[in-house]
Image 1 (cartoon, helix red, strand yellow):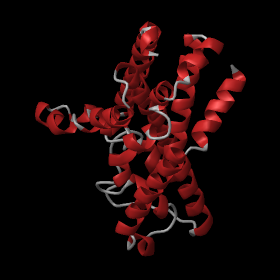
Image 2 (image 1 turned 180 degrees about the vertical axis):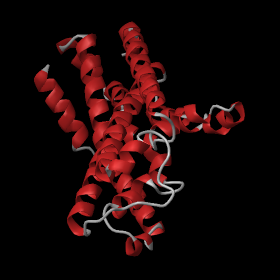
Image 3 (image 1 turned 180 degrees about the horizontal axis):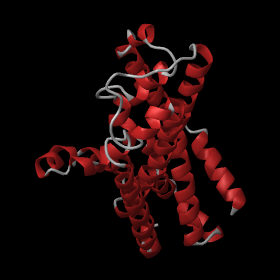
Image 4 (image 1 turned 60 degrees about the horizontal axis):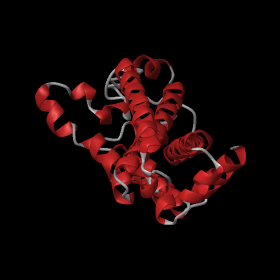
Length: 252
């Protein structure tokens, strides 16, 4: 099991799709920094990180993040099936072992795809920019705003941790969907639709604080973020496992 986990992780980590996901993330951050480049002359401290990511209006990363996290490995089950690897793999390991391996690696690669560029951006900011108290007159609203007022660095670290959790969950939503619909494109696009579409009608139902996108950019309260994450995590695990166990041998 351990050797299979390592080989699966290596397969995903060295794949072209993982590097494409990292590139897309970096591109989103670069666009955010470019759009706010004048702020680099006005503020000190964590201005690079905040302008590139957290406080960027209509941030590209906030929109693209479901695609970024599902791209590396969410479609790997379908790829195993199409390449006729799945039958051989299930001879050497049980369906439960295969599911757990796939779930862990898919989630981990999703977390890394979104978190690594953010960590790098924060390190670059801390290393190259002078120390100072970065703050905007309006501050920030939403989850953990009290922490923002006390420590911008702590808020940044929490934001990265939240992004990593988001990546783990949404990558596995794509994996779970692939058990129901054996299509690589659907495994990547469906979590994006689940993430983005509610924003178009939740606003008319006065449910904006429950929009899935608000869980990534701290646009709602912390307990709502935690509740949605827990619900999506448990739903993807239970639904994915039940469906995978029941997949007919002829479909494998």
